[in-house]
Amino acid sequence: MIASALPRTLVHALAVAGVALSVALPVRAVAEEMTISDANRKEIETIIRAYLLENPEVLLEAQQALEDKQAAEQRDQQRAVIGAASGDLFDSEHDGLVGNPQGSVTIVEFFDYNCGYCKRALDDMQAMVEADKDLRFVLKEFPILGEDSQKAHVVSQALITIAPEKYPEFHQQLLGSRGRATEDKAIEIATGLGVDEAALRKAMKDPQIIATFRKTYDLANKLSITGTPSYVVGDEVVFGALGHDVLSAKVENLRACNSTEC
Image (cartoon, rainbow, N blue to C red; front, side, top):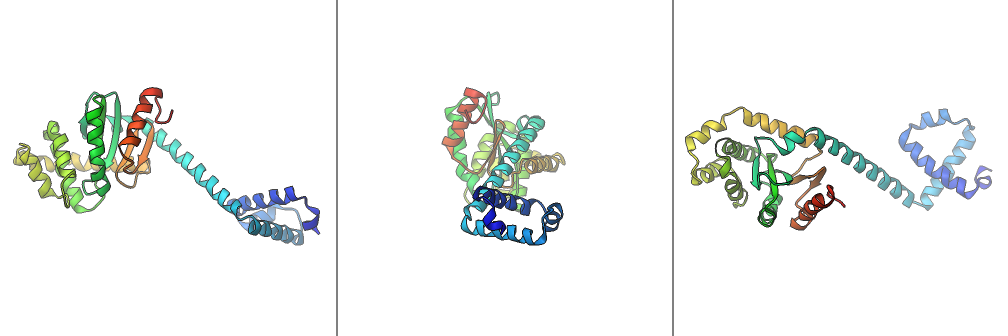
């Protein structure tokens, strides 16, 4: 019998190979490639099945290896996108700026004014730019949480166009406010900072605003960003509100070794 004739190491190898083949190729294709008889093939399949039942952790190891491979491929793709789109990411005239406009290190944040986690991350950003006078935050308007968000972000983009110097305070007040961010609330905050309402409403109709949103959505899609907040630090995409310490450590590493991980 094949089961008794095969060495244990070969059984192990066949089992692992069987997993890979079953994932990579249809059963019929595998059968056509093999030159063994149907009876022998069935016995080998029985051996593989028995091995997997006795060692189910092999499946977990295979799954982990697949996830690691996919994550590495995603990181490579993100780095390529960051390199190719660095101008749109880091230096677009249509984005809001907080911190030192000439800072040596830039963090790009994709955010939504109605994102609860973005609201929590606001204090982290403020603390970082207050402690690090050479840090620059680029804020990508990324309205993904409904009509209120879209309208509030239109106001924000219009303010960037006509009064960019007021953006940091506007951003802090709107993102830090309680309740939903809406068009009316955004306009109220902007006018409270001295922005002319008529000029603001005129700027809100500029088709460039929608074009900017579309470009941001396209960048987010290419970077596999689907939620907020998400950050670009150096050549790394960071998902979620990870906190002051994590982001600060990545900034320190960038300065020390030109990478977020030294």
